[in-house]
Length: 327
Image 1 (tube, one colour):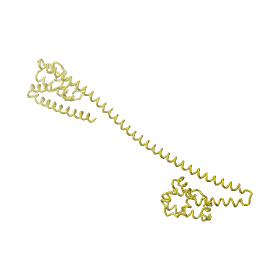
Image 2 (cartoon, rainbow, N blue to C red):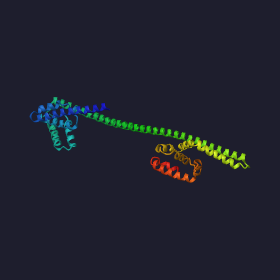
Image 3 (cartoon, one colour):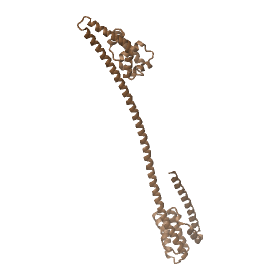
Image 4 (cartoon, helix red, strand yellow):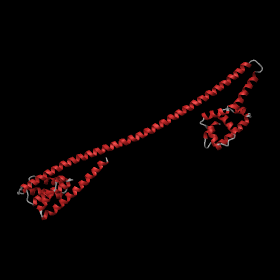
């Protein structure tokens, strides 16, 4: 693509240089027209018409050539050259040059002097003019081809750019899909862990029910029935006090996105007894159940819950607002 651009620039530079040379030659011929028409005629014959770069220059040459023939009293075998000037200046509405070309055409037709060499030179210039027309056609076809090529290249570049952008978008979507897949797999793992926790809790709950039912069945109809059941419940409560706090804490963190762990990080000065109360509250235990586990009255539990909520609202809620949802 860059090499093609260099070729086009070189082509225009060369064309401009040839145009400058031709213009200089025509200026010289026009200067000699009054003082030495024969030298002007020779100068115009020395110019290669097929090398002209634009129709304005060739029209000027045709007008000067026709004038030189008239001043040298040479008869033109055809009207081809003078018609070049007539067609150009008439089409471009240049009245003075157009009228001059018409007068020269009439004078050339009325001249009786014929010259074999002049005729040969004239026919040579006609051939050069026809070569010029063929070259212009070829150049027009080349320009059209270049324009089509540049348009096609632009379209291809635009499509490649769009393809790159679409590929980049697809890569982003694939990355997002991969991240989403990983997130789903992580969530699936969390769900599996929660299911395991729930199964464990259900098994413990059913084991407790089964144990109480077994105790009731074994003591049914006896006076020791109530006492046995009460003792059994007390033993279970003591077991929860001593063994289940860590399990309850872990379960809450698993189910509530590590909410208790975040509380520890944000509020490290929280007293252990208040943290224990927070674990019971987050586990969804009622105030009566908490009072039994803590060995305190229900009223005291309510007061402690209220104070704990106020402290968490002040210390933790600005960073972790979901903490208040457990109360």
